[in-house]
Image (tube, rainbow, N blue to C red; front, side):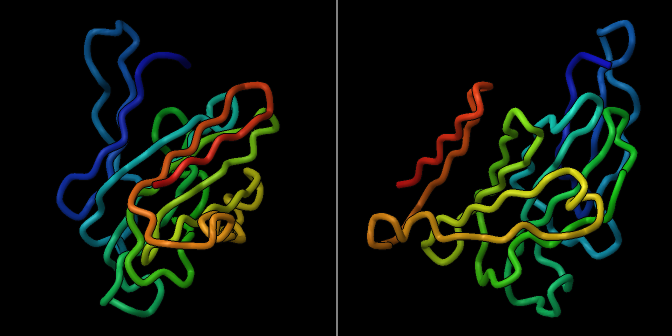
Length: 168
């Protein structure tokens, strides 16, 4: 399928909608978050493979056993919004995760990044790992520059297998 795809938060839900066949309207949105998600925000999306999308967002939930922090999660869905795997906790040690980003490399590896307590964290996972509910291993990219308080992050893939990660 082709056309415009939307992923957005509304209340305690993350929704997904695809452009209708005629291209002038959208199909009814479907919920892609689960019952654990609370106060989702900063929804981002990227195409992993033909017909498969990865959606990331931040949420305040009990997914990691604590309601006193904000976590980054991801879910793989098809282009109609049907979940293909579970919601995956990405920020396993986050205290105040924010600004999730996602990009996809040529080999369909999803690269996820976010900020946590001033650190720019990135990790990568293939489709099979995300579908199995496996969180990507994370590295502190901001440690390359000696740390410091990162306040924004951006991730982009260029289609030639190269990845750019920027933070300030």
